[in-house]
Amino acid sequence: MGDVVQMHFSTLDYVIFAMLLVASAGIGLFYALSGGRQKTTQEFLLADRSMSCLPVSLSLLATFQSAVAILGAPSEIYAHGTQYWFLGCSYFLGLLIPAHIFIPVFYRLRLASAYQYLELRFNKTVRICGTVTFIFQMVIYMGVVLYAPALALNAVTGLNLWGAVFAMGLVCTLYTTLGGLKAVIWTDVFQTIVMFAGQLAVIVVGAHQAGGVAEVWRRAQNGSRISGLELNPDPLERHTFWTLAVGGIFLMLALYGVNQAQVQRYLSSRTEKEAIMSCYVVFPCQQIVLALGCLMGLVMFARYGEDSPLDKGYVQSNDQMVLYFVMDVLQDLPGLPGLFVACLFSGALSTISSAFNSLATVTMEDLIKPHFPTMTEARATLLSKGLALSYGLVCLAMAYIASLMGSVLQAAISIFGMVGGPLLGLFCLGMFFPWANSAGALAGLGAGLVMAFWIGIGSFMSRMQTPQFNTTAMLSMGNTTTAAMTTLVASFTTKPRPTGLRAFYSLSYMWYSAHNSATVIVVGLVVSLLTGPWKEKELTPGTVYPVLGTLLFFLPEHYREKLCCVTPLENKSKALGRQPYRMAEKEINDVAHTPHEDAKREDELDEKTSQPSCKLVHIEQETAL
Image (tube, rainbow, N blue to C red; front, side):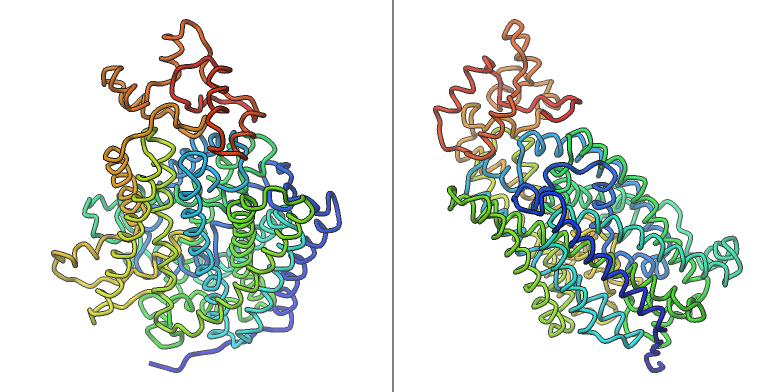
């Protein structure tokens, strides 16, 4: 094993990297000094609900495409082949379901925080538990996503580690605090363009040096890196078609369906139709991003073959290998290494800024406003900016803590991924099962988190105790949920199939989200049935999506009525022509901002709608109310 090889930036590389930071800060200043100047919480946290489809789509993509993905996906392809490419099959349902189920429910309730939904559907305790869980999730991950690319850059190029950390952290805090969600979204657009440009530059130059795309493909085939369709249904297999295409759907739903950072972008759209379209537009963009990551991995293999820089000791971990490859390929082209590093840090900035803004939103809307209902708009806006600034400082502190963790860093990152599945299960429990009650929601969330930590920590410890495994670093599809879980992934050698608890701990990380969300739903439903399922009159209007009535069409009607899952259209026929339940915008706003505070109010809504059915959202294609 040789010594770690360090390469160096040219002056032009530093200039390009600095330009990224200056441009990002400039966008924040522009939105701080123009328009409404971020004087209201509506503008600061939700961009005045004025964003169009394209910037929202690119912002959704940028949040998804973290620095971990840019470093991890090519390393995954280099080490294990193109089986990972089948993850793209999960994108279709992973975006179609949020577009036609989650977005209409959230948008029509006129929420600011996704966790307001939990109070509307269950009660304040469930809302606070969901909010605290999300804050715990994001605070831990923020420091890691800031520190990890800076550490890789320092190891390969010698660029000052803490200089890069503080530059990124402070610039991100500046434009998020000054410019609000508008600045976050438009910097995401700019950073997405930089990410595409940086990856394309490396692929084009690397493929040219290898002899062209055809030669890259030939070498990959000869090296058994072009994978076929693996249909093995074994859930213990790390990557198969089923784990990637089906398990990946739940990972996508945890991000694009219920994650506050993404939900906030939907809610910033001008209309419900544009929010839905943003999901459709981001689909081909995601496929392009996945293809670029895979192509870069194949170009890496064409250059190094089986003789990787990691095996030679030129780098110390997989996440450093991509940067080494970039510096190696582009060393004679000043400026291009700086462009790729700008691409890498754009991924980090977009993820971190989204975290700052979403954390400020949930803290303000879920933990502060309910206790200070008479707070003035000016004070609420100032406090929101202070929260964004505070979370920026917390991010820098977490980056320092991450630097002290050493090998424990992987366990710390994994905590983030353990939370996404249970939160998805909690929202699905409320949205799809009308009889689920608040006791069931709390029990389900608790069981889901216990299960997630049990499997995650057990898997990590099991692999630590098995010397033939080498823990890989950050081989990720890139979204903020799954980026963490892939730190638990190991490079498998031929071994007997595990049994007992070891088999339980060997579950593919791609199934974690599905397994943990299913735990929440099953436990939640059982507890709800045991403690008294909720009746129609206990449901807040607009919080349940009427899918269960369709799926249980074969049951007698009186059973479906007991489960509160008769569809609105059936009740329309029973009510002799009365209209399916729908709320006026004022009524939605009243319920969204004063949940469960007046039973009389609910009775009045019943009389206004003259509708005896369950209070379900009547979903159909329309613009926002």
